[in-house]
Image (cartoon, rainbow, N blue to C red; front, side, top):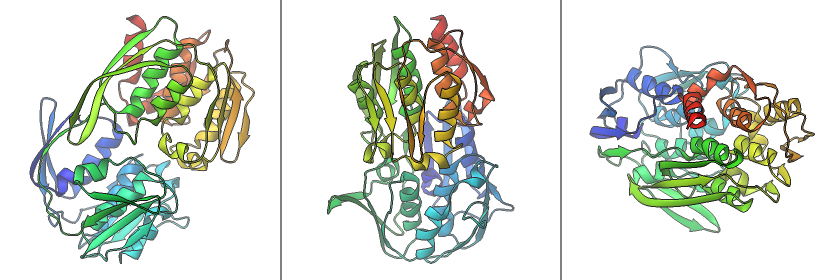
Length: 400
């Protein structure tokens, strides 16, 4: 998206050819952005802040909440009307969280009766700058407002109660400060975005599945190279260390403003309790399913609270995790905002359901490596959303 708004041609090294990034690319192409590929390099021919054109039809975000929410911020500042749609799952996810701040910037947005997609965005140019205090932590909402702020007549400020992933701020080189224990990010409307080279690190949220696999399979050792180590994304690694994970980080580098490095993981005896609540939940929201699998093999207790937003993901992840864990014979307590259970040394495999959710499928795929007689996962091809070759990678690691 940032390359599309830049002036000139940007290079992306490490583009993930998964369903969600493809949805973003297809939407941008419908807005007049051209892409070329040369080997593993994706070139984005930017159109500048004011160069997007009205799409001929609706923009399909597929299953990608990131695409719909962030692109809505950009579309809010255009001089045309856009319609954003998504698949059945995305069409159930809450969009009021972006509609409200974008509406306060002057744009008119129509949605479904429950504040869901499809979204009809009647763009306004320029938008009104706002000072927005986020009621709950969400990197997607923050980024939507910051991207809309590029099209405002003045400075837009976003205040967040808990620091969330800051990739947008880093790529746009935005100023941030701490005021009354809150992080405040500022974006000046109309600023010129220069084309650049982006080197995309390995996604730590995806790496977490392979990390836990190495931890729970006896006599394992795994080296993951070039993993993103942005400090807003590594809390899950800290949590795994707290229960005994043997991990070493080396070869630290920085590209495109993002720190990255190699992670060496060895199988470990996991002990203690893994208790997630409060601000920690926002910092590991995508890793919770695989952290729960680590908890499954923990000599202690896994407990999750303050995570109601998990019910609004690709599936109701609280219900999905609880249902599958119970199929494995685990005694699980379910709460409105989480769940809890005691770890077991001997877990029996079973037939489980992905519920069409890539992170649920991958989490129980990892568990299947360490249970007998293995795991059957229904609708396992949903991993294409974020990690297309996950099953091949897992199979390759088993053979090695």
